[in-house]
Length: 477
Ligand code: NAD
Image (cartoon, rainbow, N blue to C red):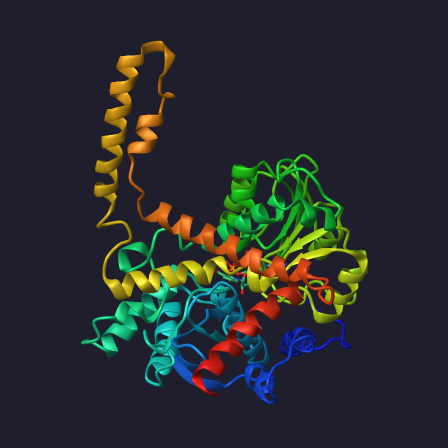
C-alpha cells in the first residue's frame, strides 16, 4: 500500500506516537531519549546457491531495548522488509511486552524475500542460512534474543531455526527456547498458531464488557451481529475472523486480500474463503460474494468493526477521513499512520491499538518459552490431581442427589464437564484471556482516568513507557 509522500515513515510514526505520550509524563532528563532509540540493528547480506547460481539476500535483526532480556520479536519474510520497518516493529515489541507484562525487551527481524518465489527446499536453505548468521552473533539465543513468526513465516520456519540453533549449540539444554511459534512436536505449545487472532477476539470481548467504552464508539449490545471487515486473511486475520464469527456471532461482511476484496452484506463463510485462498492464491473468482479488484477501497465501507490484519500504513492521510467504522482494532502492526490516527481521533473513531490488540502472539510465545525452559508441558503435574479432587465433590453431590431425590439434582453434563482437569490448551487460553483482560484494564484506567488522555493508544504508551522507565530506574540507569 502506497502511503502519501508527506507522511512520516513507519518508524517516525511510532516516534510521533511515543512523543505524544511522553509529553504527558515526567521522566528524568535523558531517559525519554534512552527509551525511544533503537539500541542496535544488525544488517546481514549472505549468499545461497540456488538453481545453479549464488543469490544474495539482505536481512536485519534489530534490538530496540534490552531493559529486560531476552529480547523478543518476530521474523518477517517479505520483499518490502527494510531497516526502518524492522526498527519500528522492534520498538513496538518493547512497548507491547511491557503492556502485557511479558518479561522481554523488544526486537524484530526481517529478510527481504518473497517466499512465493521459492520452493520448500530453497526456503529451508535460505532460512537456515539467515538463522546461522544471527545465531553466531547471539542474535538468536534462548537467554538473549528469541524470535517468533511474523508475516511470511510460521511454524515451519521456526522449526528450521530451532534445529539450526541446536546443531550449532549441541550441549545447550535450553536450545529449544531459542525461538517460539514452533510446531507442537518440536517444542511448540498448544494454541500458539491461533494466539494472535484469539487475542484479538479476547480484546474485543473485553471492550464489549465496558458500556462506557462502547458508548465512546457510539455502539451498544454485544459482538453478536456486528458487521466486521477484515484486511488480510493470513494467520492473524483468519483466526480473528473465524473466532469472532464462530464463537461470538459477528458477521464478516468484508475480506480484503492482496488481489482484491470480497463483500457480502449477509456475511462471508470464513472457512470457505480461506480454503479458496489456499487453493487459488487469492480471493479472485471466489463464487459466493462480490469481488472488487480495488481491495483497499473496502476499508472505507460501512461496518461496525474494522480489523486491519495485513500491512502497515494502510489507513493514512489519503483515506482516513473516509473510514466509516466507529471501531478499529489494529490486528496488524502499524496499520494506521500517525497522521491518520489524529484524523480518526478527531472524528471520534475508537482505535484499539496494535501494541495491545495483537499482543496475544507474544503472550503465548512467553508461555512456550517458559514451557521450553521448564522442560514440561503445562498441566502435566496437576491435571489428574485436580480431577481426583473434583471427583470427591461430585461423589458427595451424587450422595446428596440420591438422598434428596427430585428436590435437588445436578444439571446434565455437569459431572462430565466438572470432572475434566484442564489440559495445556485450556491453560494457555486462560492465561491469554487473563493477560488481555488485565492489559485492557490498565490502558482503560488511564484513558478514562486522566483528563489529558483521550485515546487508548496514548493510554497504552503511557502504561508501557512507565513500566520500561521503572525497569531502567531500578537498574540505576
Ligand atoms: P501472514 O503472512 O500470515 O498474513 C498476511 C496476509 O495479508 C496474507 O494473507 C496476505 O496475502 C495478505 N496481504 C498481503 N498484502 C495485502 C494487501 N495489500 N491487502 C490485503 N491483504 C494483503 O501474516 P500474519 O502473521 O497474519 O501477520 C499480519 C500482521 O499481524 C503483521 O502486521 C504482523 O506484524 C502482525 N502480527 C502477527 C503476529 C503473529 O503471531 N503472526 C503477531 C503479532 C502481530
